[in-house]
Length: 310
Ligand code: CDT
Image (cartoon, rainbow, N blue to C red; front, side):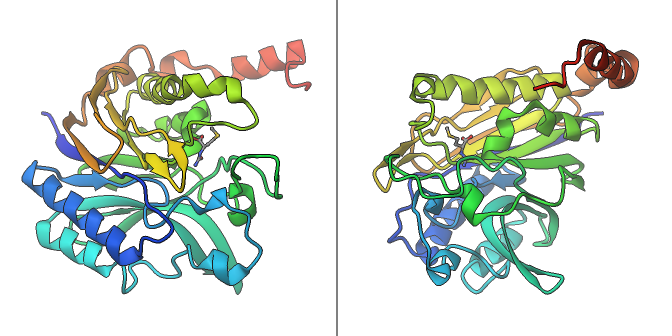
């Protein structure tokens, strides 16, 4: 028996600082309606979907910073997205800056959620691999201050029962780390939903710039193949506040093959009908963890060679 999930990677073009939440939500709703027309069950939006990518600026005024965060979800401004998704019977995955209150403390995370077709939030993930720096580095042409504005996620890499399958999430820089996918692979993940904001220029390593497209694809294809899972990679691309960012949203099959891909760098919905059982053959054979993966052997090799020494 096969289980199909039609997924839409809802690539966003740039969101400038002057764009209001209302304007952005209108664009997201347009994606949902297009998704419905194209037979989607689930529409995936990028990292920090609701605003411009604000870590590019050094800010010290906490009120100015907090204006980019969501203290509730849904809020008055995001309710139209939830309402329309429920009306259409569509699920979605949304990345946003989360202002949480936990144990009497305010905390800020780079977060994404899964919302089921009935409008209920059924999964939350908080970004673990925060790139960039925490202090102002004026020599850079633009900042990447995720380490300043966010705490490291405290939820691990959970996998949720949703849309008839095992669904996980990660956010942007997480996609470059094999353990992101493997931790979910060990939970039998069948589809990883992944949003990103990737500037083409990497200030500490400009020699990587020409490989931006390749590294994006390489990371997602490897993660998909090595864990027998679909990967849905969704960009906020184009030139935002003068900074060119990678688009190239794509859907990768458990074979590692790219099966659908954005053609431009604006708002664009990339759709594929995914067989959630397509990973089974990889999970049963080449990447049968129980049969072939021997963590004790890794430990012995590391200890013998002193490979843990820096
Ligand atoms: N948002 C985010 O995590 N961006 C990072 C930029 C790293 S510098 C190229 C990314 O990994 O795409």
